[in-house]
Length: 174
Image (cartoon, rainbow, N blue to C red; front, side, top):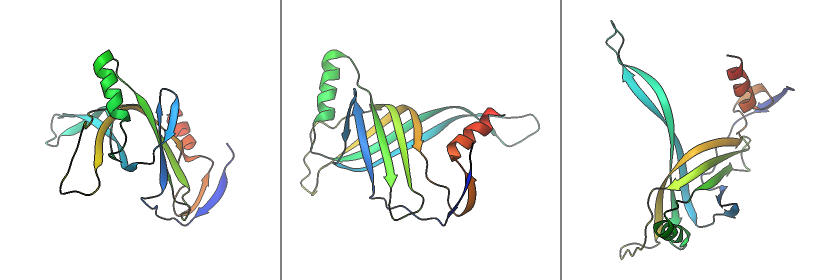
């Protein structure tokens, strides 16, 4: 693996810059009515005790992916898919590609793909006399994920080719 020295002085990313794409059954669409999205990987742990030690120990036994998104309440796609689920019994799954990219920082961009996403619930209708803009909040789960493009390393001089490849190589050598 060819390595090169890269000097990066750091930077922070604007929360407003990036893109989100949804892929439903091979049809990919850029999402413009999204105001925020977040995906989290949760470790499932079991607690156990060792003889002679008062402190509880924890063993990771699995992982689960959860997320949330807020859309403007101006699109009926999810409601139509839920109606289809109600009538056919066939659930719908989709992928989400999230790109963080602030061209004013040296860390570059990061592209994460959440695979086999599934909505937990769908808001059917909403009126809010006290509010201004109607939002539509979704919770979802995902079954798999990948880092398509990692951020560049921060601060200092690093010998890198692709940090993710290096991590995978070191794990393969264990």
